[in-house]
Image (cartoon, rainbow, N blue to C red):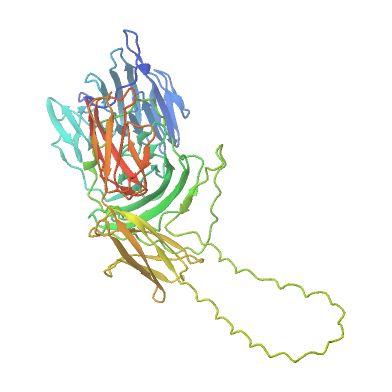
Length: 616
């Protein structure tokens, strides 16, 4: 009581990354208000204009300087700023928009105050060093060097700042500490910041992965999203603490540390040139032990949206459990609440977490050594939905396959209808003739022998995930093994005798050599072949106005390849030559900034290590 309140000041020194398009920067010699949009994720929120009283806020309401936002005890909301930066407001939290302006020079200034509660800020890095993102609380002053952090203000005014990625400088009473990623500091009123300490180890981590060509967005039980929405495409990080790779990086990953129990919706939208994809969901506990690992696969033409879900439960220690990814179904739209601000193409340093920050989790099928967990058998069947009609009649999905295929009733064999007997005719009197010699009856042919079950492989890189399929099997448990007898995965066929399952190709698979693998249910067996490839790409680039060349080698001959990058609105595609090589080039579109860009290549689910292109 009676202590002098000290403020928190979170200043984002935005040194590299996104340049706001000129059309969005005011050309006047004065600063002007920048756009801010309030999105109601769940529950309710109130807004007060200036010194006025609070009134119920509307989803999509535009905010102005001086507005205060207050969430209800069960409310979640997000404010999206001009540059795409967001602040997620947790329940029972109050913030004030002090200032949000875009100067004629291109600098953006965002100033907020947080009186109480918890927020999650995901700040885009800007090209100008005089841009800033400020957040004030009653306890301390902090300067943000990174991109995302949690601010927790208690009723006493004590403030905790926890950094997810990047660094934060926290100052109070003349003392400053630097809080790196994975660390936190607490500041009591009228006190200096505590020395940075490691944040408590996550009780669990839930990870979703996707091998393109598609975009992945994950929505938690509160309606908050993390991943990539196709508009832009835009990286969205509304779930506190979430990490996500940005567009153009394959595989796409979404990490959710300290994931809560509940149902997570997964939406996958295919992108050009279309084709097959494999999505995974995995979890580890606080000790890093794998809890589960599921996969689902499908495919379709560009723009097809697939939905799935994962329901997880948490044990006393926080360890997660689940019963499998839901079957894929067609959806019309993702259940997201996202405001996409128009921005120019973004280099890798746009504020997206560095990929080295991702925990060394099992890569759930993206590498070998961890079997995909067979989902529990489900006796009920569900019809595969028909694709939604569109202007292009051929835009029906080419494949919808889940970890547990939808049972299909067996097809009854055709029944031959005997021909009707000929009509009776008058019988003439027989003419005497010699008695004919008897003709020996033909030996009846034995019935055809069933062909037996089949097993179909394909091509993949050592350590990568490959979907294999089988037909004509019983419903007994099937074990699939490598040519040396190593078991890879187990699966159960549906009522029609079919299955599709993802297996991890062993790391020691010889490149260019067909490897035999075998499936057996204890009574029946079949073999197939998997050919391993180790594709690679090399990239040559100089300036933002010069052509970027991509050369590939080690790819399957005559296959179709796709080149992806955040510089490209749509992937480039072509055909691999007979020697497994290809060469292509493109010129960066107008507006691309200098900086580092990731370029990746794929043939179906076969991927090469992404390469970095540095534009001068």
